[in-house]
Image 1 (cartoon, rainbow, N blue to C red):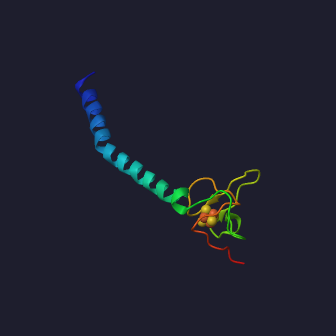
Image 2: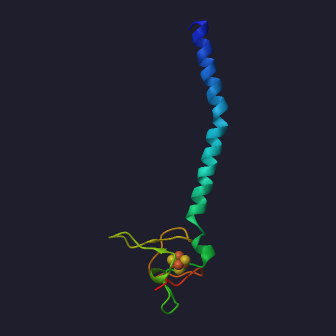
Length: 97
Ligand code: SF4
């Protein structure tokens, strides 16, 4: 390896070291966004698998995201994890209409 090649290699290494904090920062920001998108834990929301509240369940909650065809569980805009349409939690908000 001649001197020019060594300088290029050293330059590449220094550039990678200089960019590392940016990459780490971007990764941390992505993780924070994902955690926020996941929402509150089921435990914190008082989620129960089968509603005991007459006429109130996830299927008729405004925050429910219906299960895809062939799937048993949907999702929730506020609570993380798989959400059963017959479940209930303390954040229940009656769907309009
Ligand atoms: S907010 Fe609660 S009741 Fe409404 S869909 Fe989400 S988990 Fe179900």
